[in-house]
Image: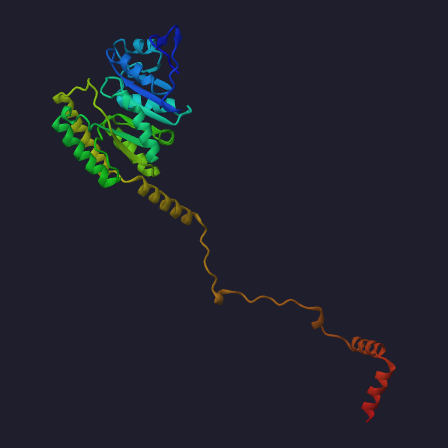
Length: 317
């Protein structure tokens, strides 16, 4: 557990128990030296471990994160948010935890909502909980709202999940969902990639209303990027077959291959069969007169005198 220098009272450190056992927080950072310290300080009080994944920042983000006593993983060069997410998933697989929460270091996600994520996952028995920016809807641009409506409709039509804000990157995933999650290849398809994986494993997915942070920037360029991301996500969801259908097709193809590899056995025609040769038995051989005479003598010797007398009387009568 992390104890900060200002958490002292009368010369003794205050031991703050984590909110939930087995909770790991992953902070995705890129050039966030102004807000990274406050985000780490608020996050570390709510979880057992705080991990910062830096995507090749050019400022002092890594130094400030190390001074805040957080575990830091950094890239040599900037490779995008999706690369940072894949690095975090690969780092979390051998660890022992129950839930992992992903949030941004820019301050747009409030760490105070982490306990609500854990509580919602425990009550609903869900493996994926996505944040929904419903509490501060006025700070969200109108173009971003329409993008959310479009992506939410496609997700509900294809997978049956209801997410009011699919573009929000504040989410919770269980260890079961992360251990089997393959790496994603496109920045705009991370949410669709996670939902498609959850649908294939028949995992429960839910959404939770969260508060928009004070540092959330509502610029027209950001709204246009959100609309582009929603369009890519909708097309990917609509034109990509479901994982369950792919499994059925693979199973049918495997069965067909097994049947084709079996040897073909043709039924034998009765007319083409050759007659079997009869075995010669010992009793069918031809006997000579001497053999027949010896057999009669043996029979006569085996009979009693009374039986022989009766046979002679019956013969002469």
